[in-house]
Length: 141
Length: 147
Image (cartoon, rainbow over all chains, first blue to last red):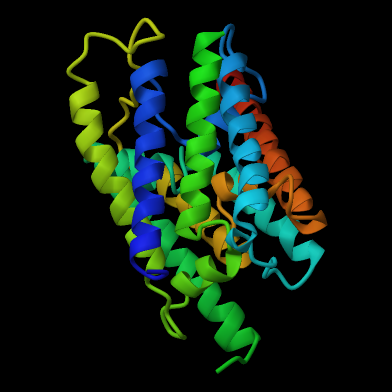
């Protein structure tokens, strides 16, 4: 259940949520794009963007109440690394026009070559980073 | 108002999906990226579920003339695979691998995750701001160049 069915169900809900945003608002659920667009929103754009981001955080509060095991402890070795990681995620997702949701879900569902390339690249550098951090620097087995 | 309500509901549903799928547990994310260690394949099923359901539903939705609460569908039109796309995705992957949070899950964990996640999200927003600054500085330089 926990390795196949539950993740599959979670995924279906993510796909449904992205579909809901497309159906009602006509927008792609790329979270880095929605958040990035809040920094200097075009006229009439702040409302739905802010509401989506608040919905994500509100969903976090609901999950914490109903299913606290959804959250594990952070894995970053220190606050400095958390800041560096955040900077890379923020700058990288804007430069690359998307993240796991925009490219990995919406873009791939659209059949976009750009999104396939982006997804393969961030999966590869993510895996390489974990490999170096865990098995080279960390020396874990 | 209605459009914000719909977007807010989509956000809540998205968060619940991320949580059930395991994306809000950084150990699970790093376990998925750790292909040389004790690889945890479960997040591949999150991806499969999300992709499958959205690919199917978007086909049905795009048969409509326009979305329910907006004038038109705003879909990406760029098709170029360029250096920006590849370098941006590469930098993002490094940050994702370091912390185990991508933007969506980070926002879901933000209200309950403590100082580490607050700092991560603050740095993520700062990174997005830095990109805006870098891009406008670059545009100004290009304009200033003769010819």
